[in-house]
Length: 409
Image (cartoon, rainbow, N blue to C red; front, top):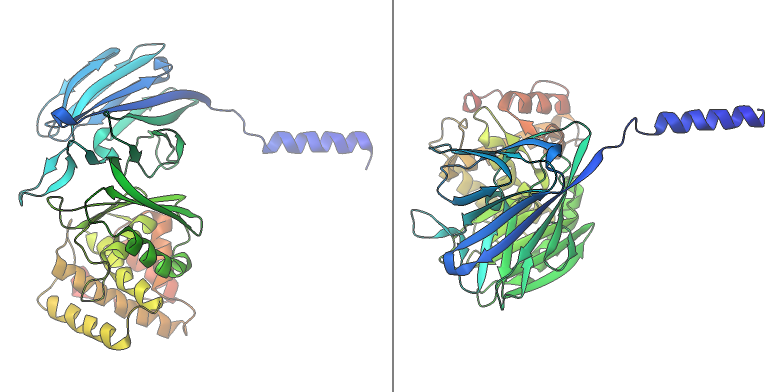
């Protein structure tokens, strides 16, 4: 080929592979000042170029946690049971400032989130509520989060990559509006870190809260090869936070992060692990719709035991005892459908998934398993009962007899 023709061909190929346009980057900075004396955080959103955003429409829940709004531009607050606030920034540099109450109690007297004179355990989802973003075309917001800590508070942990002292980069490719979600912890902390596969793991809790940090890391290290074998996608960073009563005595997953009450066992008497259950939630990131909560909750509980069993942490006798308990707990369940299902329905969902796994293995001569259905659901992101059935059928190669049940109608 002639040199000139070759050069022309290379230039053409490069032009075809290059993006047609490059997004214009605009900085969006979140500054959070923690105020333990008033049980609040002062949050400031600053847009380097206000004209890049036409509006941000915030979902403020019942509105009771948010106050003292001040905005450059127009701010419209619609109070009520489903309060909303709409910010239309001015051109050039524009800020929105407000306060949010941190501590949130439950009817039982325990706390979901809490601020004390020496630490705060909170959720980024509540610091910056969900919002609908209406922005100019060709704009990409580059988001960062910075904390201003009270005097004497030593550090802050989030599930986001650290880019400076108390500063983090917020980048969620699946969302247009990058906001700092997930569990966060600040104050006088004790923490342990390790790297498992591709994931930087941090276990942190306020000092004196009885968090068994090395137990957590040991269990994670033990099950991690099984986690990697099942889940195709692994977070770059995982944060596990814990605190004692009066924090809620449970466990909960959020964006690349897990809350674990320090009184919870690493593995319960039944063989199910609260830590591994939330780990499965973080890795799977499955959302359900149309009264199909059984899918997400069933998967999480199924893998809470299954991953520990595959790692060699549960004997056959213990596993059989677990089966008996599931059957006993769920014997009165007649349906799995619902927006939110209870513990008995979760037990029944696990039994159904175990049966489906056996059916898949039998009909595919052990070439496929429930793991393949999970990966299909992960790929979809949001699933309902009908889509779940279609996934299972495609894995089996024919209609599932197990899923042809009144429990799912």
